[in-house]
Structure formats: structure tokens, C-alpha cells
Image (cartoon, rainbow, N blue to C red):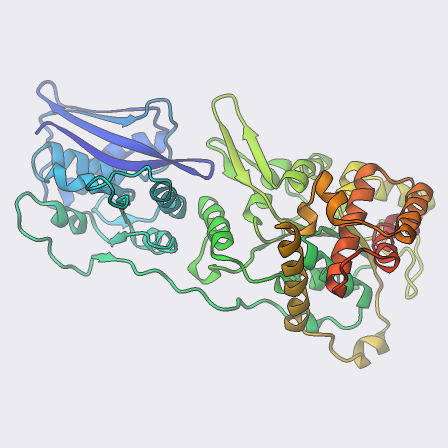
Length: 523
């Protein structure tokens, strides 16, 4: 047989789109042509595949005209993931493998010159794509009325462990090209049982991931309360305080206050991390905390490149994005946060392609109140002029601050307080209250309070007369925008949920108002 078809997948954003690797052998001048909108690293597969086949003792059809087409032709293909399917396609087209046996499988893997298989990015996205197709009923069936057949996925060692996280996925691990070849030899002989070819069992998740404990932070009752509210309602937080007051410690422990990840959330987070090359099995079902340096560019935060790669805000999906020294970030990088804070997604558009990445993260930001950092401190005098303070705080635009729900001041503790203050409440007990508050919100409206929009805000955040009057007065005096009022309402609803109250009362609104005044109070 001079024509063979092998199935694989190409990554476009978080999508893993099907690719058919078509291999044709013909008589003529010997050549090896690869077509189908392949990037440079894919075109280099010609040399890797040739050497891998020869060095494993198999026959490379060097006297044939080899044409490899990666279909569809208009879908960009990158990385070395197509090495394995190209090699299998050549061996099947030359009659060394049974092409019919390859039909129920999809393959991806980079080949070394000696035939060893190396991991590839996005294995979890490939496995998720197959699972979604099976669930949608789009996969082929053996007989009418039978359940859909999900193709088996063959991957290198590290990638296979990652792909096996998807429930019910049938994933096979191979160490070497020969491990794969032995499974698809012509004839009816059963495949050999080899250590190099193994079906991967799903990895059990831990009941509770390990996070730093908030008990390590002494004092800071106001900041701890703000973080509890933020965790319960899915809100964003801005902490402002002097250097060394504990802002970074608080932020690093915030993920430990959030409810345990559901399987769906864990898969979403892991799939994005896999695209960015950051996924590790020990981090399975652990909420990520991404903390980019303040020199990070807008592209580093939101993603970009060709092909598009996820940025820090997508890598923090279902977790925490911690931005320390917030005013020191480039203005373009900060303004790029506006849309994902509202929508939970980021779309990267280029002339040739468009990719969408999830970005449903919780923003925890920290800043000093002034350039020297000691404005309002009781421990050390500030040496900044009012104009310097105004310029420094002015680096944060009003629209960005409008989108941050909670603004809280973090005061520095005196030396004797730091030494003598007992440890604070542990993360586990706070997380218990957070889980209960979230369950109330989801039972009531099907989402966290931060996700409420439009008429749902009016329906779920109803105020009694006294609370409505208080909010109107506060909003008028503080010059709030409509967005600020809505965000205050959602925070007040979360505070009521933490208190177990059915309606939003004056005390809940009053506390919510206090969390939007930190910068104004610093002037």
C-alpha cells in the first residue's frame, strides 16, 4: 500500500484540532516533501524521522518519492508532535505496518535521532478534545445505537501521564518508536506485552492540596477579613501598606482559603499549564498562584506570540494572579487586565490566526501608598511630597481600580506586637466558612457573587430601605461610577452570605463601602 493515513492533533490556543497525516510513496526521484502549513520545527521532522527509522533497524524507503500532507492545509502546525505519526505513516505506506490497525488511534510525540520518544506540549488538551467529542456523540460507533468509541491516544512517557488525568480516557504510553511499531505489525499475531507500551491508569487526586497557612501571619485582622470575603465571593483585592507589613505573605496564602478544585476546574487549569509547558503532576488539583515580576510586559501577562501562547493571566486560570508593586508594572500591561477581569477570557488576535484562552482568575494586588512606602505609617515618617504621592497613585487608572472589588490598608506591626501577638486563625477554619458562603450563593443563583451581571445583581442583591439609603449617600459623596456601585453590592451580598443572612442589611453595605476607600484615604 503506497498511501496511509495516521491521525493526530494540532494546538490552536486551548483547542486541539484534528489533523490527518497523509503519507504517499511514489516512484520517481528520491525526495521527502512535507506540506500543510508546517512551521520550521515541523519541517525539521524529515531529518528526525529518517534517522529514527534507520537507527531502530527498520527500513526507510530512501529510493521513493515521499509526500507527507498535514491536513487541513489551512491549520497552522508547530512543534515536534507530528514526528511519531509521520514515522508511522511512512512505515504503513511502505507495508511494514498494518494501516488498518492504526485507524482507532491518535498519535503525538517527538522523536530523537535514535528513536526515543520525547514529551510534547498540550497532551491534556488533546485528551480533553477526544473526551468532548465522545460526550457530544461525534465519535464513530461500532454499531448503530452503541456508545461512541473514543480513539485511543498514544503519547510519550511524560505526556501520557498528563493526558490520563481526563476521566475515562484510554491513554497508552510508549518509550521508543519500536514500542509502538510492535503493536501494529501486519498479521493476526496479538501485540507483545512490553514494559515500553503500557496503558496509563488515571491518577487519583488528593483530597486537599497543601498551601501555606494563613496562621503564619500575625495580626492584620482587616486584611485577613478582606481576603476571606474575596475568597467567598470570587472578588479581586488590592492591598496597600508599608514595606514589610505582610502583603506578600497574605497573598501567597490566599489560594489556601479557596474551596477545593472540582475535577472540571482542575482539568481546565492543568490544560492551560500544559500549553505553557508548566504542568507538573504534583500540582494536579492545586490552585495555581502566578506572581509575575513587575517588569513583565503586556504580552507576558495576556499571552501572545506565533503561534499564540497563554500568558500569566491564563496560567492563573481557576487560581490566583498576584501582582506585587502594582504601580511599577507597565501601564499597557495593567490596562490589558481590564477585559479579562470582567469577562474571564482573553482573545489574542493576529493577522493569520485568532486564539481564545480562559482567564477566570482572582486578582490579588499589592502596592505601597507612596514612592518611599511609609505614607500613613506610625513607625516611620514619609518623605514624599503630596505631588509625588499623587503621581505615584495616579499610575493606576480609574477604570482599573473600578474593577478591583476590595481595597484594604495593611498596617505595619510594631516590634513588640510582632513578637508577642499569637498566631492567627488557620486557613482550614476560614476555608470552612468560605465554602459555606459559596454554597449559599451557588444554591441561590448558580454562580459566585462576583459573576453576577445585569438584572441578576438587582435580583440577588436586594437591599432594605435603610441599606439602600446608606448606599446612595455613600456613592454620591464618594463619586462612584455605576460599576463601583454594582461591585459594592456584590461584596455586600458576599458579606451577608458569610453571616448567613438572607437579605443585605445596612451593616453589610457599610462594611463593603469601607473596602473601596483605601486610596482616597491615603491622600
